[in-house]
Image 1 (cartoon, rainbow, N blue to C red):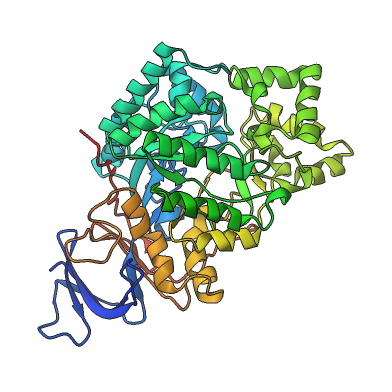
Image 2: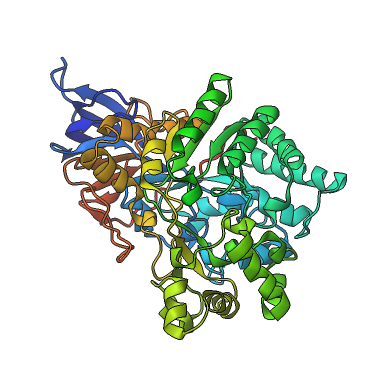
Length: 539
């Protein structure tokens, strides 16, 4: 054997009671599990790690990550590795970097600068989904990447490629092209398709168009992961739309960051769960992910009404520069409630600037738009418009509109999984990027008892592995891949806070991928054991 983890408390990912055992690893897989008191000789190996007092769990799977470029630029990637994350699902919210042509790549880079940076440090030497996955595998001189990664085809990028930025139905030829792109991406290894239906241009797709694309995904055994059309006013209707659409398409559904936000949805989590329970009982295949925090995180430009983004980023800046158009945008934001702000009139005291691209705007970071406006003696929209214009749409925000009781109710549901929605850009990113998984284990399992330790681990491991159709991950079981995390259940906790969001967690001394230590004794090693994980429908 290569390694024995001695006297670990095995929390195996099934949700069943934990037990003490020696776990032997060999060749990147779990070779033997020897429970305490069982007959036979305890396994031995070239190396033994004393795991007494530590819980041994499958590596955590981040079902909603925005590390699409971070994995290419950062060999350390402790933001996720130190949490015990061994697999991230990329390509989220309908916007990412494959499939593209040269025009689309330039546009999508501009569109999500706030999520991933402008990419000026990246050699974009791919154009297809397969090319991107291959790039992950050969990154850093062929060593690979910090953690494993799976990919969702971004429907907004696909529409940008085939249709452009026009707010109109796709033609028959354009829809056929989108089907081809999705089919190709699934054959090349994507696990499904994402949408960002409050982001342009993906939000311009109607249900018929989305249904057709979901049928392609379903043929390859993938799933649809929508950021649906509203998390505020009309949230329940938006969830129902996605349930109905995927049922019609015969496609599995995974609801991204399934929250119920804004004042209109306070206390309404039970209504969402009743809707999901009814659909599950009727035979729909549904799962969801959430992060264990109340604020959300996105870009400031995402708050604008969709019509303001028609034509792409340069068109947005042109409209902001025009006084009449800017006033119309303000009216939609502050009075009518724009679709970008989920149909709810914006409350500037809930919009905290978390990051800027332009250094001269750093003074705004960590303050709400309302606070900065008051300090300057101007209206909040004047401040917001200046930020959007001078930062070339690269500003990220925290949006403090969530409800703790909704967060707790949703995380208890049997189809729940964990997803950080972690945006790593900005001077003050959301602490969920560095803290989601220890926050679940420390605060919500140990301190609050919302979930038992065993239930919590199952939510973060075997359930997402089942959604991804991974036959040899997500459980501590003989023959499974040795993607594992050892943590102290008495001390594990998120170190990240809203004041210090890049602080690493405590109580997670060891993380292994493919049987190799990526975190050892609480420190990041130089090991790059991550690879692209291709979907079951890959050709």
